[in-house]
Length: 393
Image (cartoon, rainbow, N blue to C red; front, side):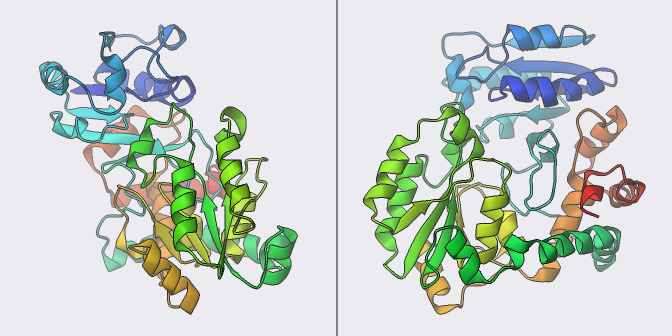
């Protein structure tokens, strides 16, 4: 069996904390190849990463260091040459960290993307991941039988109740809407739309899948369409606080003269955004995982992205229809039953701790996108207290 790791957009942190563990586990069970460009724009594989992986036996490294290696992050300038090379390797499975979803789809064998596992407000570590067959397909779930849905709901029941109790007891979440909004500096007599911004650093090549690659363009688009019945409450991405000069965003917000405001969430733990989503009238996302908090708190949501959204999330199709639905109170929201089932499916079936997963588990996930036995294992992990969600119980 051959497994290819295709890593054009892996960052050093991702490689050292996530991918190297997956390579190490699978190298003992299969012929493992790693295909990546050299480090550029904080993506690819550099000398430090190769040094950290030097202990791994029998890994075949292919560092694509030609003049056009930068293009691998989005649209390879010589796609056919890349495809020809991968066909020579002939992997049975390819594990991708790539913003380019088109080229890997033509690789031989089965292709999965390594994606962030976060699904707020679940407390999931930032180094846990999922294998996803369809890049950024938010809310994706297999066709489940009635028995499997019951199995998920039962296995996740205690953690689900504990999670709901947590927010039913937290003062900021149970406060009256007017009090919560006033405390955040927002007017309580207007419809409040929450906009969590995307990471806007040059290393985020995944922005090609956003409806708007620039946060400034997104804000201007929304502001040009909404009237004075609305106010836009904006939270910044935690990494923007650390690495991005956001003066242009601040200037645009200032120019909107109170129609938009930036809410301080620089602590970076997501709590402020969750509080806003709980108390606001609508949520606008591109590819942000905040979409799951919208479903959890029953907040009407618009997704402006070039990737698919599962129907159960009930997201709006256009900004105009979304604003109309929020204004009239007719915007649909996800059903509580579907929200519970998806969160249970995600928690019991999808989560991977790269440092703890076994080769057998990883191979099984590559071979079988869904396995009912995995639900049983997830439930056992949850009951043992070793599962991360046990912290919510």
